[in-house]
Length: 385
Image 1: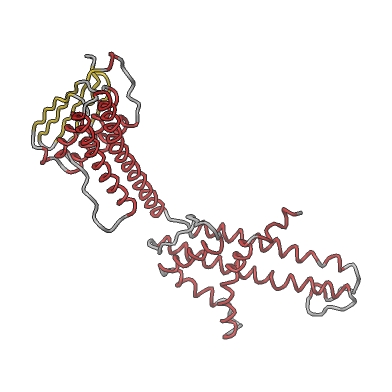
Image 2: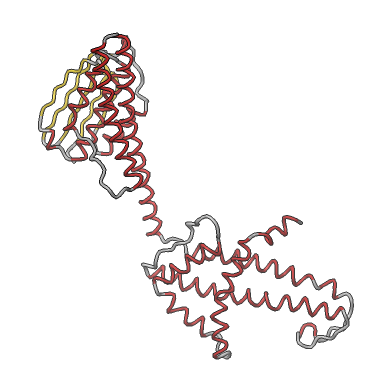
């Protein structure tokens, strides 16, 4: 019983009822002008429904009254663009008018029927309602009096649900709008993944350098080495903070310009940071780095940063070879280092996965793993952007 009466305590029941009553306000005003042609408002809705902005208004009303609460994406609030959307709006307006008429009828006549049944039970005769005109007064009609109210309760709930279902069908996003929303969502996910990779590469590199430098300084027990280690940690931390500020600026959509993303032209800074951390880096850079397209140069910097981070994390102060070659706008990048104790570890970390994802996004190729000669190798080839 409690479950049956629960809709009486939901605001949605009454907002849907209000939504169904709204069209009848127009009919009521027209009835004051000419009550012999009540079909005129329904006819006027046909050209009105072809106005693009009407679909927006109907979508907003449906969101606010039919499904109040969290925003419901089942209703489009964009103006009609295609003729199909305009026709759907016209059908919805006519359906809403029909459901509104039914709602008004049951809300008026069913309570009146209850009152008249009670009057019959009290001994009065009924002349205004044809169904009860020939009925003789009797107390048994008091038992029938609640039935119209129960029918009213069911009709209000049913018509509200029917209006909601019709609105979802006729005011829902068109195929073009669903495709546009899907593309926007895809762009958001891609941007989120890109930001996650940026933070992983930058902050991960800074923390790795700080840990390696701090450990080396403690082991060296040298004031001079400690000073160099602290300088390297400071520079790497400052760079990471700049990257973090830039990424947070993008997330906040800050109006002031943020610092530019680093490119391979800044590769020297990465190499010096790795050397200062104790790694013996042998670098061979050929070709004009400044001629690389922006996306290729930026992603190449991040790939090199992640590769050197992995060298510091897994190989420590061991030797590493870096080869960067630029030719005709294409980039070939290779970082290799001996495996510690000759062990082979599977390349399943998020950093190596990020390297492969970066290369794939630019249409390039990436290999991460042992090269067969006892070295771990990261080899990436990126085509011109």
